Structures are given as C-alpha cells and as structure tokens.
Image (cartoon, rainbow, N blue to C red; front, side):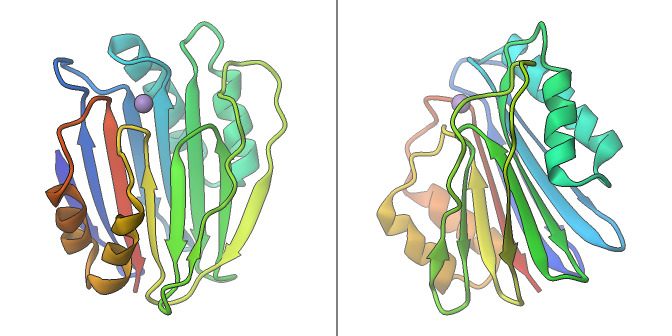
Length: 200
Ligand SMILES: [Mn+2]
C-alpha cells in the first residue's frame, strides 16, 4: 500500500507492506495535521503477524486521541497501554509551525533521518529498548526545520543503504523519492513501513 498526502505545510508519502506470507503488518503509522502542527508516528509491534499488529494499533489509537500533548507524554501514555501486549518500538515526530521546531521522541529501532536543503543529514540517536508497559524514561530531542527539509522514517524491514541518501537530496517530491527508494529493493523479509516527508 502506498499513499500520498499533499498538505499545505508538507508533502508526505507512506509505504506499508506486510512480511511475505503474512496477511497483516505488525507495523502501524499515524499522521495528523492541525492548525498548529503536523504529527507523524510509526510503531513496529514486536515479532510479526496479528499480535504485533494489535500492539502497534493500540499505540496508534492512543496517539489519535492524545496528539495535542507533548511527544514525551504521548510516549508515556502509549507505554501505559502496552501491558499484556507484545510491546512496540515507537517514534513520534511533531512539527510545530510557530516555533519551527521538531520534537523527536523515540524508543527502539524505528529510524529517522533529516536532510537539510544543502544535503547535510541529521540522524537523531535512538534510545534502545521497546515499550512493554514497564516504567521508562523518555528523552525528547528538538530539531529546527525550514522549507525544503526532507525526512524519512522507516521500520527495520527496510534495508537502508548509504547510497540511498542521495535520493533525498536530488529528488523533488516525496512521491518520486519513494519510487526511487523502492526501485532497487528486494521484497520485504519483514513488515516494512516508510514515511517520507518534505516541508513546503
Ligand atoms: Mn520489524
């Protein structure tokens, strides 16, 4: 499945496929735009299949209801719902239109890379572990953004290659970046979700 959102402040393309042979993906994502911000979140339920999907969907439902809160608090609320589930890794990005800052909060291996228009890349340092319902500390990194900043967020089903970086500097729109990225990838050995955004 692939979808494109053309929002006033940002263009976003999202790709999601299940691991080969599975009917459902254990990854889940959510994006929302309000007057003041855009929030993008991605979760990967531990393992694959239905139980992984359930855990990831529980996390996304929390975010649907609580996206106005700060990203650290949202992360904590997701964690509180993870008891009795497989658990998830989760990354939340919130682009605030007024402050021009991104709040990045993460636990586990959903990767995120930002490219500024000059081609300089920034990779926030992920926190190890996963949300299991056990008490955790969260760290939020604040990253400034401006027009033409590109970012990619992806689950571990994507084998990102250092040669792929150039796609995000050369291509014009996320739709095209996604096509270029998927062009030279083999079929997924794991659930794969990729979100590419570009600030307008
Ligand atoms: Mn995975």
